Amino acid sequence: MKNLTCLNLNRWAKAIIKPLLFTILFVTSGDSLFAQTALKENLLKGENLQYDLYYKNGIMIRGGKITLNSHLTNFEGKQAFECKMIAATNRFVDNFYKVRDTLISYLDTTNLQTLRFWKSANEGKKYSSIEGGTFSYRNGEIDVYAYKKRPGKELEEVNLTVKGECTDMVSVTYLIRGLDMNTVKKNKDIPLMLFSGKKKHDMKLRYKGTERIKANNDKKYNCLKFVLYVYDKEAFKDEESMVFWMTDDANRIPIQLDTKVKVGTLRGIYKGSR
Image (cartoon, rainbow, N blue to C red; front, side):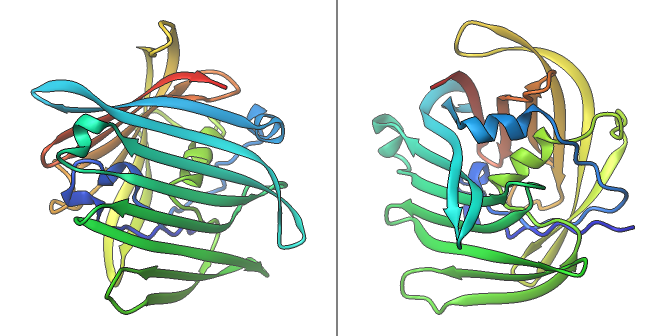
């Protein structure tokens, strides 16, 4: 049985902050990897995770903040999880590249499938856009509608029919958090395929084992390490494009996220929950 997961890549890659927040549609193959964990219980209670944002190019500087929060909400007459990511650069980095971005995903409360995503990117004169998509599930297939609108540009739209699971950059974090580690083998690739408009990029997700990571709450955590490889030399410094460290427990809290770009590395470090 094949699983198809769809991602839509935006134009973050050429800027300092962009690759942290691109919206993705990607393809996987093999049996379902998702397992019900404490994640669902945490989403029912609500989460508010706080991160410091850093930029590293020779030296590392603190560049802003990221929040990742979730709560139960009403979505088209039924309950759903609303998961929101907000990124903002601080005043110092604003002088070089100002970012005020918001991403929202709605997930089914039963199986955590993505129902809809929405993103507002506001990066001053450099770049801004509104984009999103909806996912309709029927008879083992998913009808996907995705769109993107930039000021002064025509609306870009795409309609796809796929099989399996669909996600975006916010809910892909929850997909990794919900992986059944009994089905994931160290250094064995999960093949992915990324679509950027009409372009297609090969990707893969790889579990690299465990590491101990210090967070910005002065605590150290045993973490599971996952690497996302994106073969797009125009966007990223190398193929090992994004690295996730998540707590090695049922909660699977993201502790650190690195994104390698042509001009350095972006790093989000967990500092606590509210």
